[in-house]
Amino acid sequence: MADPKKAWADVGDAMSALGLKLKLHAEQETSEDDKEITSALERLTGVVNDIFEGVGNAARDPAVRDDARNIAQAFAGAVDATIDEARSRLKKSD
Image 1: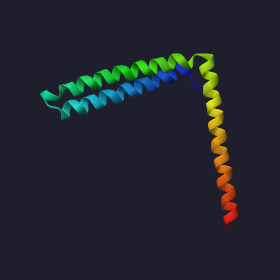
Image 2: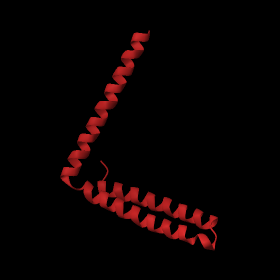
Image 3: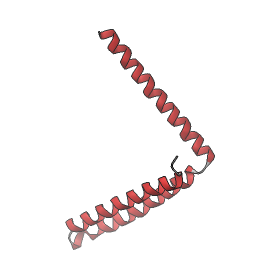
Image 4: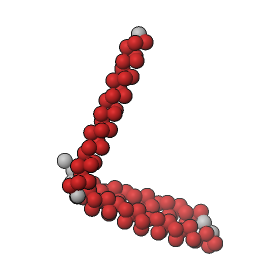
C-alpha cells in the first residue's frame, strides 16, 4: 500500500510541474504588458501547492479517512448497480 503522505506529495509535485509548464508557456506568449498573467499563474501555483498540502494533512485525519473510505464504497456500489442494470437491459434485448 502506498504511503498517503508520499502519494499526496507526488500529486502536489505533478501539479507544481504543470504550473511551471503553464507559466513558461504563458511567458512565451505574453508581451511585457501581459506580465500580470505570469504573476497570477505564480500565485495560482502557490495556492495549488497550499491546497494539496492541506489535503495531505487532512488525509492523515482518521475521520477524513473513514469518510473517504465510505465514499469509495458508495462509489463502487453505484458502479456495480449501474453495471448490473446495464447487464439486465442487455439480457432483455436479446
